[in-house]
Length: 315
Image (cartoon, rainbow, N blue to C red):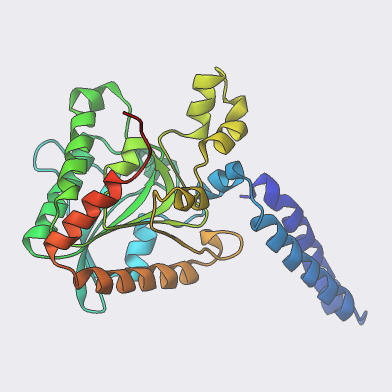
């Protein structure tokens, strides 16, 4: 699938392939032309992806080929064992979690999971967790704390499921409890936004010692489409809404709502999974080594202070 702003690049790449076929099928020397076109494509890619609008980054964060939580889990961790259920209602397939190891260090990994095709999307509820998903996440966090294992969360959701049945089972309470309990976890907590970070659905597993975003992701109280529909009664103004919301990784870092940005390859995370796995794995190892030197009391105190310092208000 090509996004609108990727089409000029794709057109040039198609021309390059045609040129290479001509060279292979005939004696025509097109080396200089090929080299020139390759340079042009490289420069166009740099210019395009280094100057994306906020809405374009939102589109890139939703790219159907973009790696999801389980893609990273199976590439980064060894011996991953998924755990199921909230021990109360059901096993929410939109929220996954379990133990795995990185260089012999065991981690509890929790994250939202979207689906690749229609059947998977229905099973995973498009990455929108119900209350039992957040209660499962909290159960696994408490389990990690019991066995003194650090926690990694991967955030990628268009929001918590807004259905009537979710509200009846206490969606707001489940997320609020997670916020409260995550502040007091005694083990290191590393939160990584790998795609969409929408509203309380994202925040429900995003209270950590370190919160970082991949380069082409977004994090906001509301999606551009929903913001547009509230302010303008139409989705047609989603691009203006994205600009006003200032929801990109750079925006979030500028206002100190996150602790860092993990760079993506040119073109987005889906263009080079190995590169992304290497970068995320390095970040996790380095950050865990740093947090592990601190006492639980220090981590909790700094975690609380960090979130309490966010935003501005007047008495």
